[in-house]
Amino acid sequence: MIGAAAVYLLLVAVLWIKVRPSEAASGWPPSQSVAQAFGQALLNAPQVMNGVRIAGEQQIVSAAPLAAVPVGTAVLVLLGIVALISRRRQLWLLATFAISCGFYVAVSGLSAGPLRSLITGVWYNDTDRLAALLPVMALPVGVIGGVWIAEGVSAAWRHRPYGRRLVLPRSTAGTLAAGILVAAAFVVVIVVIQRGASGGVQAAAGAYRMDNSAALLSTDEQELLSRADRHIPAGAVVVGNPGTGAALVYALADRESMLGAIGPEGGPAEKTIAANLNRAATDPSVCAAVRELNSYYVLDFGSKEVLGSHHPFPGLEGLGQAQGFQLLDAVGDAKLYKVTGC
Image 1: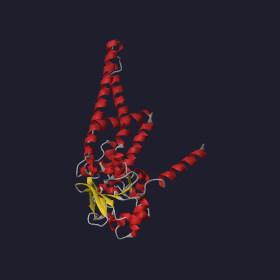
Image 2: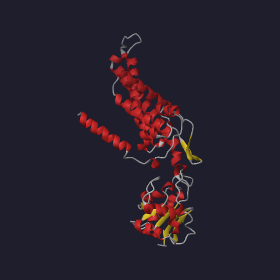
Image 3: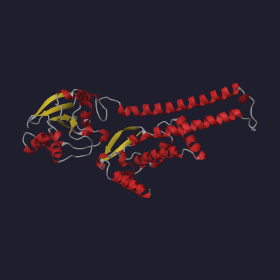
Image 4: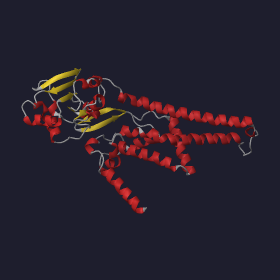
């Protein structure tokens, strides 16, 4: 048994440290202090992200002030924590909530470095992604808090202040009244939790609203992708900067993207195309790379990237004026080209 446990822990350590996204693909920076992150996690009120600004080469996440605290939900969760500790039962629920809070605090509050990467690199260091786990883990703890309240109210209903029983609960009417009271308490708990969840959804909705100022994919780009399969044959590999949303051609048009995620540079052929594609008419190495990858189609979504990051693709600049490229489709500033010079 000890040997099996040791092998399991060793396997987990290897997976945790080695088999995970690279730091280049986990580039979300911390956004606040540890104290702020701890308070938000405990009160189930994670921050609302409102964009990213760039200072020099350092990404700085701009976060809204502490999101409106869902008071009812926060109170139930705190009461649930007290109930679990006092009863010393179902402590695994408390442990799962504590782990989710710990991940959120680490990714949101710890300074960028080896410790933060060790703890949260598996989660892409994305504060919003971990914030989404908080209500999931807090919900059972909040339910425990609501049950604790209901049990206390029910006990108070059945007893006088000095411990003598009321006559009413011994009757059918008394039992019914106690049941109605407990049921009402459960309804209140459900309504409170639902309102808290709805508030969080509304607060986060702005980051995912689809319009022409959207961080990842504008309405023009989405429209272009919706009909890209009319121009791009099946089996083709589409060139594009994934940070601009071009990699979504895989999800929205069922066509393979040359690079599927922000950060990875790919092999020699991918690097050649990213750096020199606009020289296809004059540089034989470019056409060799295009033929190797079967990447005769290019999405140009400009240079604006999600999270304000910047991954240069100089080979995609000026395709409209470069020799050897045909414009197949365009919606606003979103363009689809075909490499004809190879």
